[in-house]
Image (cartoon, rainbow, N blue to C red; front, side, top):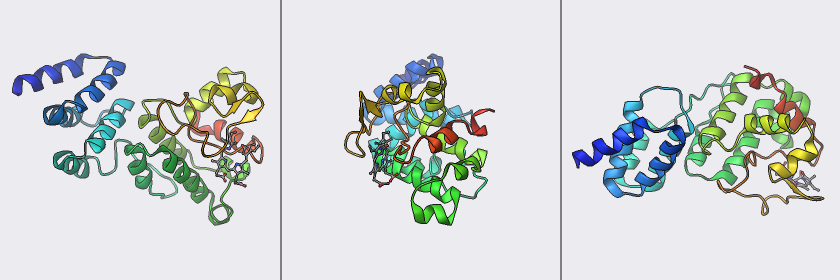
Length: 229
Ligand code: UYC
């Protein structure tokens, strides 16, 4: 057992991030010893800046759902792996819980609710955003939301990913939509049934921004100063 652990830990420590991701998922399937090793590795990684590997590890421990992983998650991962900074004093732990369970559809809905909470009472009642409200969003809160989506999606989802794709499409919305799976030909992807609520989705697919009232909201999101630093 000790040998198994050491071999595994040595393997993990030396691998590239991409291979670490694969190994974490592999070892989560290897029963109690694999899970034990994952928990030990998480602790020895300490307070290094979180990466998608940490998010995947958290997801695997939640999915394993054994008494030991449950206790570990409660003790060491109660707030997840991302520092939940908020200038608006908003609690993002319910979003962590959903993303750690890979409940991306619920997480997407909660993300819109959190954006409305950021915008204030009027937006919460309305249920959607004015672009002028988005412009006023605090940097930390957007960065936290983006980090959460990024780290709990193997690096696939989040606003900064959408921004990168938008910039590389020459800021052309009509080029962006099919790239992120929001439009095929002349047809908008229909909410919610036609969207892909797991990691088989294209890069940048989530979180969603409804385009019913035009591109100004997503435009404000993707040009926000949060992504400049
Ligand atoms: N919906 O089509 N969407 C809704 C998207 C459009 C529409 C919610 C995204 C096109 C209506 C989310 C796309 C369109 C509602 C999204 C998309 C349209 C609705 C729930 C691809 C018609 C009912 C949150 C760009 C041609 C609610 C919310 C309403 C809801 C997301 C229709 C997250 C990414 C142009 C009628 N759509 N949406 O905002 O407001 O309500 O009436 O984008």
